[in-house]
Structure formats: C-alpha cells, structure tokens
Image (tube, rainbow, N blue to C red; front, top):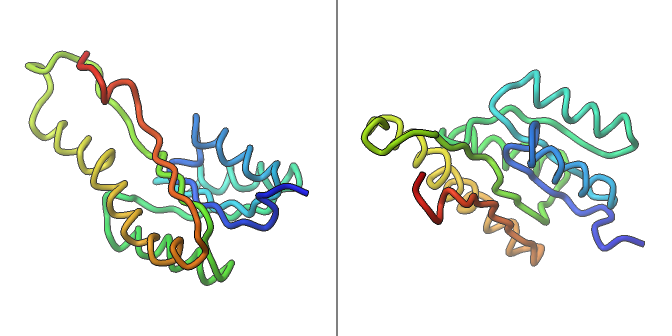
Length: 148
C-alpha cells in the first residue's frame, strides 16, 4: 500500500507543466489531489484528466496573488476532504530579459506570484498541515540562484 493513499494534496500551478506532472504522480500514488491554477478551464481539464486515469482529483480556480482566492482554495479543500496533508507551492513564472529592460512593475508581479503567493498559501495551510503532521513542498527555479 502506498504511503500517499488517501492523503490530501494541494498543488498550486497544478494545471500545467511541472505542477501537472507533480499532481499526476501524487494521484498515481493514491493521493486525492486538488489542482489549483489561475485559469478555470485549464484547471478543470487537468483535474478531469486525473479522474480519467482513475485518480481522485478536484480543480479549484485560484489566483494565489489574491488572499481571498488563497483562503477559498484552503476552505474548499477542507470542505471537500476534511483535512490537508501536503501543500505543493509550485505556482510561479519567470521573465527573460536584462535587468535594465525589466520594469519595476514586472518585478513586483514576479514577487507577488513567486514569493508572496507562496507565503500566502503556506500561512493559510499551515494550521491544517500541523494538525495532520503534513508537509510543505516549495518548488523553486534556478533563476532564483543566478540572474539572467
């Protein structure tokens, strides 16, 4: 039996790319997966694909740069499953270009999503993860170690 069987896993940025791969792996291992992302249609498509392969998945549209969306993500997860075991902070993006060509507004958007979004999700989920002795997984990028 898998250690992930019936664990509740929330994956931000779970509807595309690496997040979708992470969500699929958890679902394959028997976890119940909440796929979170900004685009409602993409989120539902990703969750439907997991369900089509036998996974238990639920999609929630949420913009983690907005505290009300983060609060709703956590509350809907708890309403549906009653607990939370893992938060995967995967949502994020990068901007390619020189520092001098990147505007302060672009930097602000990156900080809101890549850093403050992670902080918002972690703070909202932490009490529930502490209750289940759960886990937080933070996905980063090499872009965080060196400038382009």
